[in-house]
Length: 349
Image (cartoon, rainbow, N blue to C red; front, side):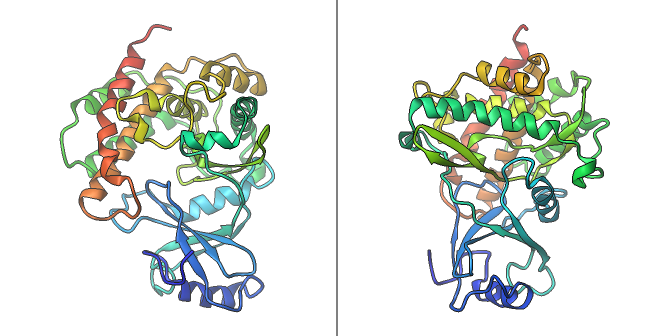
């Protein structure tokens, strides 16, 4: 932790805001903040010095694309899901664009949840293979619980438009790609065209996380009994086709097998103890009480979506608008992801 401001967050301003709006959380000394590494877009800070450790989320420092980085939506869904799936307790959401007291953007504050982020295979050493296997199954079961939750009783009835969701997703990510173009990636354009021409008919709609993966969670517990303490990074959450989340999880389950995939966040490697993704899909289906779905289109779409996101990160890196380490290599994974998506979409059932 540091006593000075970190990029994008004025700790003195945050202290004044806490004292004024949430005096029960305000500390007596200066706040200390540190950027939490791992996020590819929104910035996350751990803050010490208040009555309880806090977390602040804000948009990136530049190139915020339309509809992206919506702090109010993320705050709303986390607040609504408290008690349904493991999420942090939220404190407040603030529009600071005019005052510029804390971030100069909309930001939100939540309580800090203690736990480890399994963002690299070396983190597996803290857990037994049996524990990691059970953790992988729990990840699937939490996802099934999320998708089983009825939006209306949670106050999320108008959170999205499920009808036509997949078609809109394809158009949205094509727009995001066009807004972030700095080079040619032919495989990515080919994948987008193939997916757009074969959009499946969605079944039951539900709450969609949008970026569901193990390294977007905090893990706590004994070495032989890890558990998911909190699911994080809800910035893409909406109402739509739940299989998008399962396809995304499958893509991340194998991302380190791709050329350059060792640069990607995530701990899942052969021999660590994690279940296969087939086991994960089976566990999801068992918890949901449904047959195991055909995920080919959804897994190919996951490759496309992440490739577009990483292309946007690459764009911001070339403009000097990113904070943190590892952004210089992000762009190298875009083409392999697109080629993986093309391969998946070619596979027989």
